Image 1 (cartoon, rainbow, N blue to C red):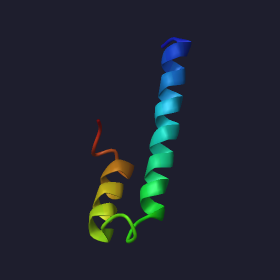
Image 2: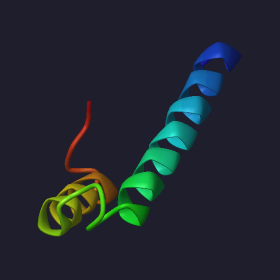
Image 3: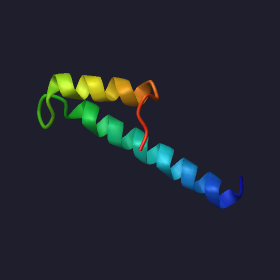
Image 4: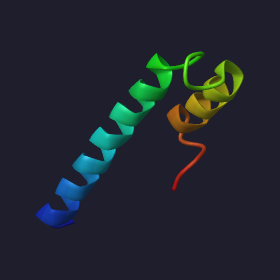
Length: 50
């Protein structure tokens, strides 16, 4: 893996963490609680990938 790929992976991981934090923080205000919980579980258990 070259340095460009490493940088992309780091950026993607950072973005994913920030996005999941945003969803978690806005659960029940912007996002449905049950749907949020299921989605967060899927992402955190690596059972879903883009």
